[in-house]
Amino acid sequence: MDRARMAGGVVAVCAVAAVALSLMGRVLWCSCGSWVPWSFDTWSLHNSQHILDPYTFSHVLHGVLFYAVLRVGLRGRHPQVGLVIAAGMEAVWEIVENSEAVIQRYRENTVSLDYHGDSVANSVSDILACSGGYLLAWSLPAWGSVAVFVVTELVLLAWIRDSLLVNVLMLVWPVQAVKDWQVGG
Ligand SMILES: [Zn+2]
Image: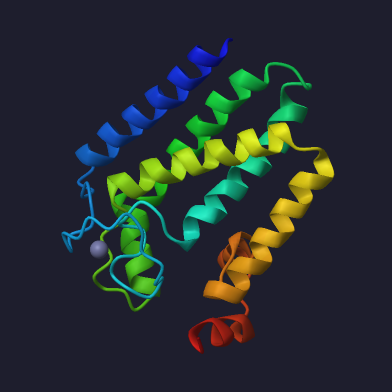
């Protein structure tokens, strides 16, 4: 697979995801109407509605992890195909995350009664961030990817008191002390 096909594959994945998410009823853009492309306050209604927010960086880490897994899965061959697969896995994740059932569950477990799922623009941005993370890991030596992972986790913990690993931990094994610390921000 050459570079053009690889890029075309990622664009196709984004297009399919965008159509699917629109049909599922997700808004194209934040309902606030502001065209500012970023939103850095995770406790606001704008979170996951604009293009760039702190969680964009945790999606970059998805890409780094997908690269590691697919390198083993594809036995170190076809990294271009791996990128399209990684984008596809992220698209599936975004679609599941933004399904009515998961949104409902999220609304019940948090105080955000106004949460109606991520915007389509944000989901596409997350798929691209994941693809970027994959390309980053592809271009770096293994220790470089590990460094990117650790530094990003630490920055997110200091910035928004959340990160990819903490997110997974709280999903699988909720720790009250961590929850208190997160809300205390
Ligand atoms: Zn907004």
